[in-house]
Length: 95
Image (cartoon, rainbow, N blue to C red; front, side, top):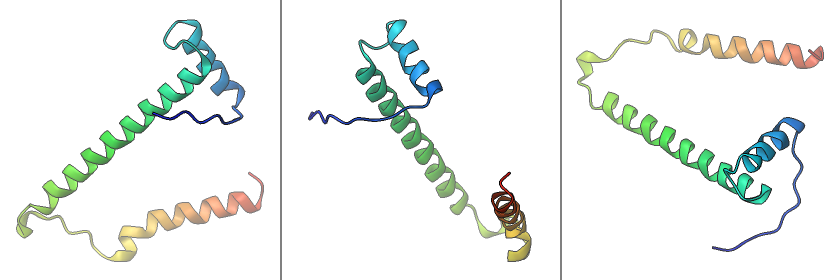
């Protein structure tokens, strides 16, 4: 396993959390804390992805008569488009 030196910046909260992990003995130093927590985050994302894929496969395996109708494409996407519009409006007004 190679080691790459990199200078990074942290928010106060992120730095305090990493320091807390070192102070309580979960990791020997800040570098190990950051690397360890990144490894944990990666593992969690991979597990979430595997669960999502398994659920999609389960649903795709259902017979067609067990599928739920979704209605029109507009009804399916209207909530997402409304959220995007709201975010754009907030960004324009600096909220």
